[in-house]
Amino acid sequence: MQRKLFAHAGATALLFWLGSLAAQAAASAAPPLNGLPNLPVAPQQRARAQQAAQRGVPVSELAAGAPARYEVRKGDTLWRISGLYLRQPWNWPDLWGMNLQRIRNPHWIFPGQVLVLHIAGGRATLSLQGQGEIPTVRVEPGIHYESLAPQGIPTLDPALVQPFLTRPLIVDPEQLQRSPRIVALGTGHVILEPQGIAYVRGPVGNTERFDVYRPQRPLRNPFTHKIIAYESNYVGTVDVIHGPRGKDAVATVRARTMQREISVGDRLIAIPPRQYLNFVPRPPAHPMHGNIISIYGDHTMAGKDSVVAIDLGRAEGLRRGDVLAIVKPPREVHDTTVPGRPLISIPARHDGLLMVFRTFEHVSFGLVLRATTEVQVPDAVTSP
Image 1 (spheres, rainbow, N blue to C red):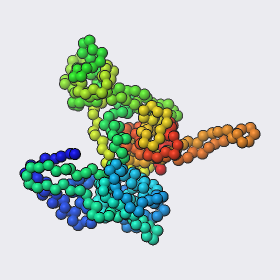
Image 2: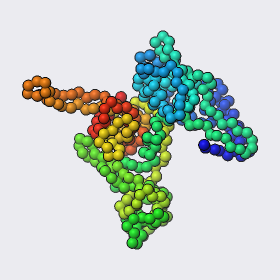
Image 3: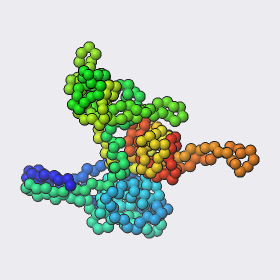
């Protein structure tokens, strides 16, 4: 359990701060955030929630078997709860709007809160049973320990996507060309040992620490076969101990951590900022049409909870949290029921859903949320 130490002066300041927050929230019926960050919600999502708050949601939009009462449990996700109540879970603002007066921010829904479904006049609303308030850390002057407030439920299961949020993993061709590269090790070494020294050429700038990666399989457009990006293996981190020196501008680095051996030819990339799971599901801002180009782990087929790469990224307007439909493309088969076995076209069909959780320039990672059959390269992805 996480613990936090409060000294006398710090506790007094925190009490004053929490008191100010409570005073600011007193004019609203929603429970206060009690010091938790008021994470952003897009204007169009808030507008949809406000519409649901005023009119409720048509019963036709409810999922089959939507529970009359549901207690939020540890391990729940926003996607799962939305799916319990809505036919289209990416319309989660409807879920929030049905309870807008009690849930101040949809990022902060906690285990133990109870959702109650009400249906009247063909429309549905939700309420929180009991107080339904965000847990508060109570502090008093002095030195002691208090449990930190519980974490709100995430959008996706962190165990499935967390490893993909902290490393480069995808490198586009332009970035590969400009990445600093290890050109030599210490005399007599072919593999860098822990705390060992290596020499680097390329633009290191003022960056003091780099991830080290090794380009692996190229990711290609499934139809033109043009290389879009490279999958990469993270191998460790290095610290720059001397910037570029000498006539060939060679920098010196020292191995900080090693996940596998580091050798000549490995590339350096500045450690990316940490990405969090505080995004929410939504449809793309404009129509999307792309394809699955890789299934993580070199598998030939994917299913629910698999991670896939698609050939759409930030440059195409894709955002973290965007939900896409997985579509089986049309195919031709021989009709063996008639003479001549003519070729006929089997129409495309929607086969599942994925949510984008990390974007690169022209490639993104998505988690398969639903699949009725196996997902394969190059299944299409479109706006839901």
